[in-house]
Length: 286
Image (cartoon, rainbow, N blue to C red; front, side, top):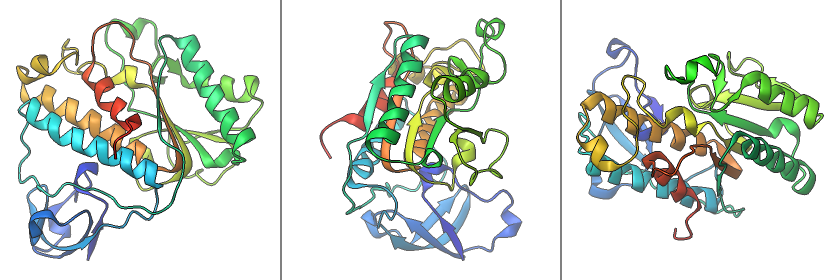
């Protein structure tokens, strides 16, 4: 039996030989269309449906549902097609009440640091969370040629790991737990720092996402993710980058059980489709 969270998290077997055709598969999603099968890549499984969100609050679940709907819309808008795509979109159901997720715009590095500090202090002093219940998540590191002279290869958006560590230890006088090299220390005390990829399978009371600056443009070329028309006319690899970046944010957001904040540090006046996607987390409609 294979148990999987959902299609959008890109959880799939590394080696097809490890699985038998039509193995039972438990999937967390709704059952629109009553499709009997589910695909992970090109591997076909029988499907058993679950739709109860055991982790997130109602507010976070609704925000995540909005991200998923927008993700599906974005695929159509940029004409991106996935092989053997499962048309059943995950829409979670939750009964646990909580606070509304928050989208925060930080126009420069100073504001970004202040917003991170503000939310950490709020969670500890106002909501009574322990330090180890809070994690800072950022997308996988990325510096383009222009920025590589400024930011080292440990960049977390516009803030290096050393800056984050100093902010937590020296400015906030709290403990720092670096998980970027692996999750073996996940139970250790301190405010955690990790990439979104290394956080898959984990959950925390509070998640603060930042570093969207890292995914404002393509890794492979100079294309900036500024509007849908630009991406629609781009090659398939650029389209895949956009969608995978959205999925990364979605995965990070779904790590939060009770509190979720996304701090957008993409600067400039040009509209960015990643920012427009992330803003959905804070909209009022369910």
